[in-house]
Image (cartoon, rainbow, N blue to C red; front, top):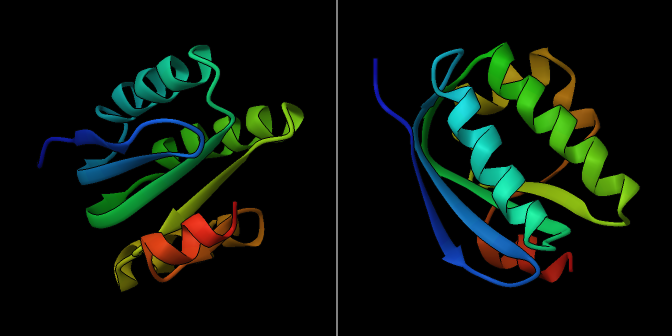
Length: 113
């Protein structure tokens, strides 16, 4: 099992988090905590860069879904970029890509804001 690393690549609104490793039942709470810290500091727009994400489970998708819902209520957004085929396939299977915007690059995601 690979650990999860979260690095804030750009602070401000939108904030960019680079996610490395795996998001599963064990690591999803770490992602949730990091997102809650950002939101608690007034961030309403978040870009998650999944360039180095190798796996996401339903627990991870649950965290993303709850975060997306909360940010939308605050007139904000959560967007994803740089998804590997494996991660995109999992998100497609759970219909999450129907709810969230996905971009091929960080620049594309930034242009959304």
